[in-house]
Length: 284
Image 1: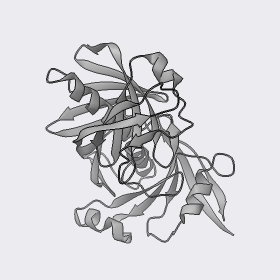
Image 2: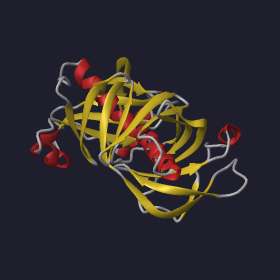
Image 3: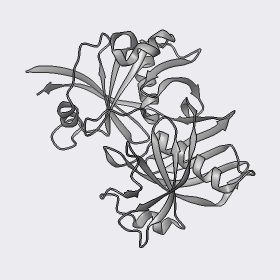
Image 4: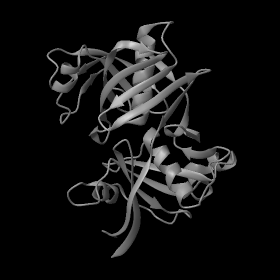
């Protein structure tokens, strides 16, 4: 039975198994990923990050051509492939810089299934340029256990799909039972992460908007934090608030606070990233 070396990391409690595979020699099945991420029978994580050179895998060809040496092969906890993970990019950057595989002093470009993302250092830890975003037309009706009636949500695409729902109070947010997957109508073609948000009172203080959120991640379940979900939540509330809304936001998640800023049609996410421990595991 083969042995797999790994590192465990997290960004505001959104945790990952990080596996180094620079030459693209590791072919993990969906079942193997799911076992590694299982919190009872495996290491336990919201997802897996494979650290691989862009030139070593077909999916990284475009990133390699643009000069991004490393590709973040992100897998959800159920083993499915995902386009992007905002918190994951910061953990990925932390791993590359701590192990000496990359230098971030002039910006670090990494490949993802949602295109090349650039990371820099920030006061919060790392900031990632998530790129352009899109606010979808029309509402999505969201049913969730703990909500007495369905609520409308807005679709936000930040490289992966989200639906953001506004709630009226902290009590409504806390009453949600996200052990059950929210039901979306219509159902997005590729599914979606679902964010439930409550604006702070006041919404804006010293030019910074503030909201609180919980998230159900596609292919995972409720997580302590979701980076792209944080960005989507801030974009949705900014959209609802109108033209006077700020471009800088602080978003409280169960796992901590992340920063979002919007500039020139692009959205940026900032926050910490930690590497917790390393080890080896038998790979079934």
